[in-house]
Amino acid sequence: MRLSILTAALQELTPRDRRDADPDLAIEEWLEFARQLGCPNIELSAALHPTQSDVPAAALLDPVANTLDLRQPFSAARAARVRRAMQSTGVGLSDLAYFDNMLAADESVRAKKHELMLRVFDAAVLLGTDAVTGFVGRNPLLAMDANLMMFEEVFVPLLEQAKARGLTFRVEQCPMPGWNITDTWHNNIAYAPGPWIALHRICERHGVGEQFRIHYDPSHAILMGQDSRSVFQYLKDTGYDFLIGGFHVKGQVIDSRGISAWGYGGQTMQRGDWHGDTPSADPAEQQNAWKKQTVFCEHELPGTARHDPLAYLQNRSVDWLDHQLAARELLRIDPQKTFLVVEHEYPKARVQDKARLAPILAGSLAFTRAIDEAAAAMYALQHEVLAAQGIPVQGIGRQEYRS
Image 1 (cartoon, helix red, strand yellow):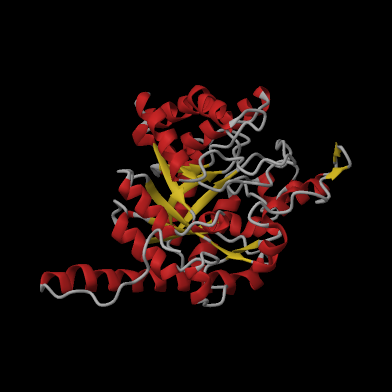
Image 2 (image 1 turned 45 degrees about the horizontal axis):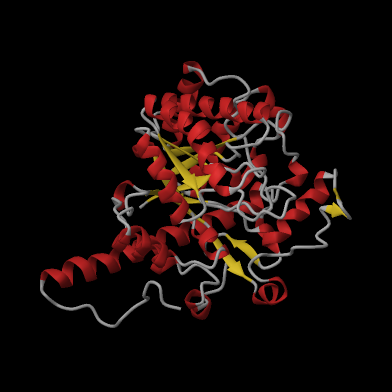
């Protein structure tokens, strides 16, 4: 598959004072950094500028990056500059990414997010990529079925805009449990195959089914007690094995001690984001809402978690080899055209120091490349070489729907 890396892996590669004055400098420097890492592509991260965001940085678990600065609309001149940098570094573009709540309850806040998303769409066209990755989100004031209606009302028009530009919107499935200080766990309604199918059926009714795809991230499956092989098999069983169009390569490591204390719902009380019956107004304290997730798990940068066969079988960590095999065996993808995007959110290694972070990212990229090549070789040997000679594959292997 085609390797890429999300530029949020190092937010401060270009210091804020330099990139605010020269918005596209951050892209140029990230392209050069990717070249040094040996990564052939980047997933270019966009976000509301810190001065415009409705969510303070202190309240974020995983800070987002506006490597692509869209305080002003992207222009042909800016695109030409970025294209020159891509040509000189030999680094391409997998897609653009803007992760935000497109179903925000406040209409004025939502309008600002949608405006930025349209700017991201326009930038994608100017830069020659055919996909944008992001979230659907959720209106926390509404029940789930009402959010489906809201999706039809306010998100489908975004997909119509994507269609007009020849783009696909790929939705990442993180449930975003700590996105707000409510006790709601699912704050991104596109969190699993059941919701994906419900949303796609809405899209089909409006002629934008081809624009709605999933950017699958196995870390979120582990977070919810799933395994990738069963998720992919369910999509195949239901005829929706075409839905996954790209991958984030990020793992999750479940802490069994945390599960013993709180279960998969995470910490439900005394988190520190409320004071009695009053929500905290301090963004740093609001981040404690993420204890719904962080008390029992931790993100993995691919290759940084110990090899743990029992954890793979218990869905407590990502079995990367089987992940890549299952994608080839069960999904309707063309591996040679499909992107694997490394996403770095391993807390202990999220250092904003280029010299320290570079060998960590380079090692993870090398691991991702090698595990995918191993899966490709294994798939070819079993499904093509042996099959062509009528020789059966040995053993049983990991099975879907089996605990």
